[in-house]
Length: 113
Image 1 (tube, rainbow, N blue to C red):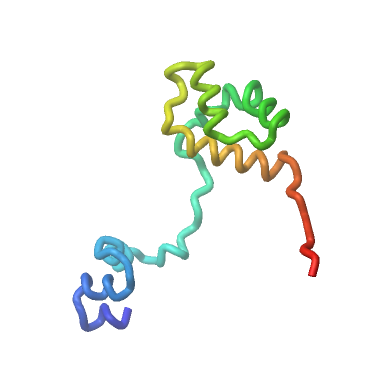
Image 2: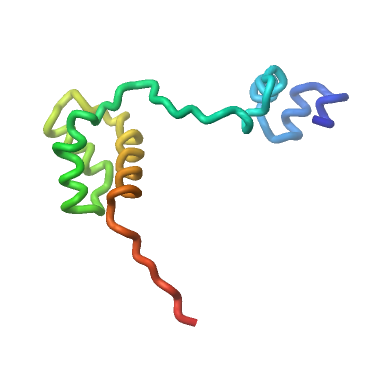
């Protein structure tokens, strides 16, 4: 903010390490981005809701190390045209959350000194 007082917004943004567009957005905002509450609602319907309990969870229980890419390819084979490649990141998030809540526990080890 010290650079913004006597320099242009572009120069102040460059010195802060952010883009000029972000600097303009921050200047116009009432509160800082770190102080805005996190969004907790979904903006879209879950695309995997129909197949999650019936197909994905049993596969994860039988082989917990399966990767999301493998599961997406299986879903694409079973349901052509329904699950495009762009849904991979969504499936990865779902699987990460499932593993945290219901997956196998992580191996704990203590290194020997």
